[in-house]
Image (spheres, rainbow, N blue to C red):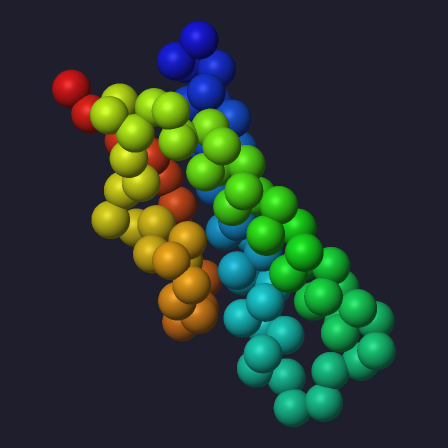
Length: 90
């Protein structure tokens, strides 16, 4: 079961990376198109869903799993694309 959880967390983190990449591109645009604004709003909603899933998957397992140093975007920092990963605590 631990491997399934790790795979799910890895997939969610990869999706967060993609969201952060596209959000950074959106924020750099001077005048985004209407469809880009709609996509940004949808990514914002999906990002919230992903963070909730990550919290759910790790809340009962905090003594076994923790976000790596690279997971700072989970804490609300908006400094551009981030790398996400989780490490197993021995």
